[in-house]
Image (cartoon, rainbow, N blue to C red; front, side):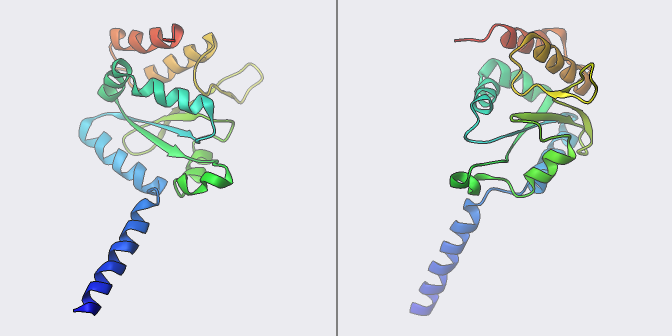
Length: 177
């Protein structure tokens, strides 16, 4: 009986340790793809890190009730943790850095992309520039960054209502204090 109890305790401990590791980027994306396919939505993936102030600002923006309601109507939002400092390396989603690069990054955080329901890139947060290439808008705070984010949403959800688009655009152009 003691052996069974020890085995159960060891199994519970190993399960606890395994569950504390973040899921891989592939696992997160597979779940998002399944949901996006079932709900006929695009995927919004954004990459961030605990040390990044603009990432926290994007997280807070996406968590606002008015923004969350609109976003979840058209998109399956997904956050992946990358580029953590040594102290918080365990927060990273394994494979997140490779996916970031595949989607056009890294060029600063936060970095975001809209994907189709199969994980194909629709558009990323690299705003085209006259010099070519692109410049990551991060959290869209400046006029040209908000303009690009609105364009990104139009490309990813062409059936998004004007009112819903305006809700997000207005919130970005006049942030709450």
